[in-house]
Length: 151
Image (tube, rainbow, N blue to C red; front, side, top):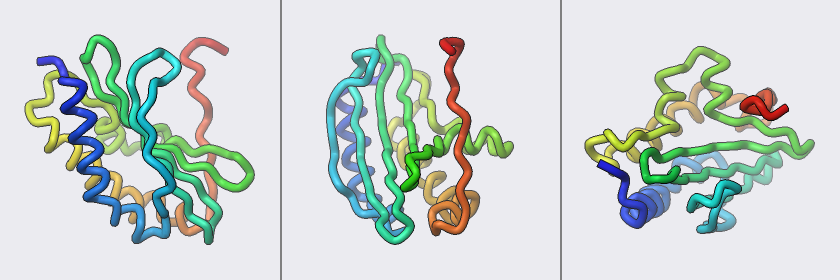
């Protein structure tokens, strides 16, 4: 079953908005929601946050690849030195493959709403555990860029 684009974006937007506390309790304030297209021309929904105390920026992006076969979440944190931490890459580098696997949703997912809820729940746990020192400003770790063969 292919992901229905309009439904997937509506569900993602609604659940992100109802789970803003995941971000707010860590000092992140929502700056904007943007619906547009990524560099490949696929639709994307981006939530941008700012955390002023540690001077961090956070982006949560959801996109569907053509032809509606998988949903993709991207979560990136930028610090004041314009260094970027890609949360999925960070988790993979640190052996958290189960958490990292939730960043991609295939067309075979039986319940998209439950998938997004699981993703947000995982993100909340990762923020509270693995990324806590980074989000508090006590530590920083950039993730290497995955050039996917284009370097």
